[in-house]
Image (cartoon, rainbow, N blue to C red; front, side, top):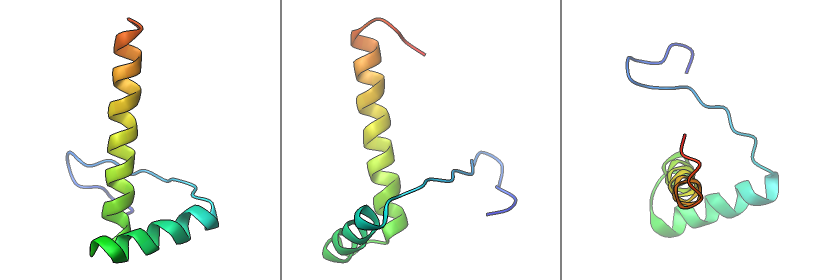
Length: 60
């Protein structure tokens, strides 16, 4: 995505081949695209990280 639309961000993520293969398998099982699954896991990780930081009083 060379020119993101307003309100969108571009994110480049390095994923090891083993993890990538597992994500594709899981995406097929859930009948969703691999990109949607990756975004789902990124959001989950960000929420967990935010909760940990909030509990420690660090904030952003």
